[in-house]
Length: 132
Image (cartoon, rainbow, N blue to C red; front, top):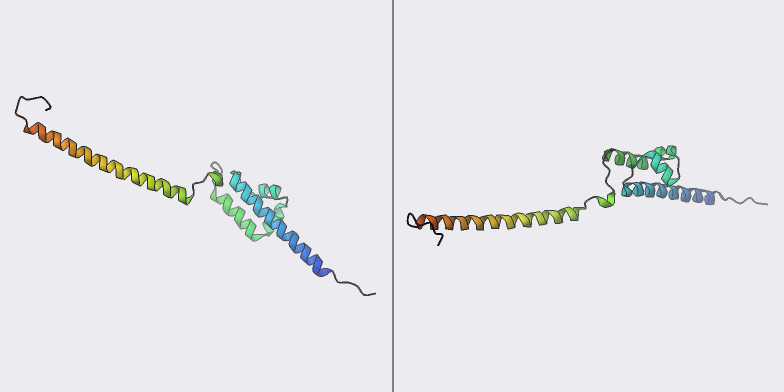
């Protein structure tokens, strides 16, 4: 009786389990970051259902967690959903520029109006205090 070599199926199943675990770890990191919770090895391990040592052994995941930890100060964590996007910041900048343009035009108009009134005051004969 010939023995059947099932090693390729076992290797394939192990690779699929590994990929699923990596995906769970990335999903956990993203969920913690989006919700504003601290991204730490302990929190990611608990959320993803993996061990901390497993996280430390995978360099890309370890680097991502370390980068996110150092990017945030421990006292101020803003959830990813609440952070201003580039488009939002651009719209705020455009609105501010439009307001500045409007205010400059208004200042120019008011200065001209004041200059006209001062000119009219100077043109009046002395002793005439009426505005018209």
